[in-house]
Every structure is written in C-alpha cells, then in structure tokens.
Length: 193
Image 1 (tube, helix red, strand yellow):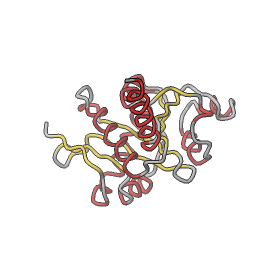
Image 2 (image 1 turned 135 degrees about the vertical axis):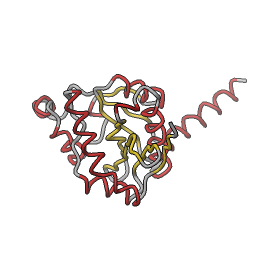
Image 3 (image 1 turned 60 degrees about the vertical axis):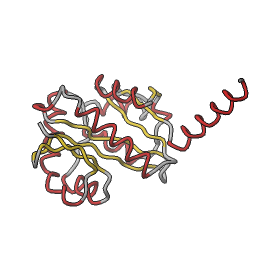
Image 4 (image 1 turned 180 degrees about the horizontal axis):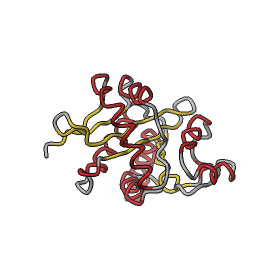
C-alpha cells in the first residue's frame, strides 16, 4: 500500500459521491448514525480546503472534514470513514490527526469537538487530547444538531432536548487555550525551581 493522507482541495471533489455512499453504508452496518451528507456538501468541504482525504493511488481510502460553528468558537471533526479493506492499519488515526491539525491551524481560537459511538474513535480522540464532556459543553448551534437527524437514534437525542444521546461528546481545547495552559505550567514550574 502507498497511502497518501492529505488536505483535500477542489480537485478531490470527484470523490464526493463515493464518500457519501461509504458513509451511508458504514452507518447501516454499525446501526448508528454518521450524519448523512449530500455530495454537494462534501464538494464544498473540498473547495474550502476543510477536508482530509486518504488515497491509495487514485483510489479513495478514507475521509474526514472539519466544520465551523458559533462564529469560529467551535470546530468539529466529522465524517471520519475508512474503507473496510483498509481498516486495522491505523489510517483512521492518521486521518483524524491531520483533521485535528488542520482545525487548529485554520481556527486556533476554536475548541475542537466531536460526538461518536465508536470506541476506536474515542481512543483516537483521547490520544489527541479530547476529554469526554456532556453535550452542554459542545456547540449549541442548531446546524450541528440538525446533522444528527439522519441517525436512527435521533429520537433519543430529540426526546432529551439535545442534552444526551447514545453518542459520547468529546472536546479538545483550542490551540490558543493549550498554548496559554502550557505557558502557565512552564511559569509555575520555573517559579517552583
């Protein structure tokens, strides 16, 4: 395998239909929702360079995108998917790392979040510095929660006024907040010496 994991751009929009199909198939197999998206939505992510794509030559391997909420206060990493034949090689982890870096690079003031039912994604998120949180700590932007409507568990979320579901909310500090925290710790450590 010669897998390239790169920031997507407009030329990668040709993969939009295949990505949507892959997301839909995976959601059916898992029995939980990955927010269903239309090809034009995915093409927009490529045009705005808010996507990470993994390719084996010209074959789609995996994908993830970032989305901005509440005037750049929050950024989500969403739609993480890897074709079944390429799973168990750490590709999802590398895609997620690049999406996380892209979010921090483009939106350093934004807190990065996601929701998932996948234990593998929870482990990857934890390694990147995400912490489990209640949904009240996540964006309250209706546009984000509207994406959950395609999930078979949406009735649970809706019944609980968007406060809880089967997914686990995970949140990472913004790049700016992490830099402040590291600087504060460095100052405290130097004072203690």
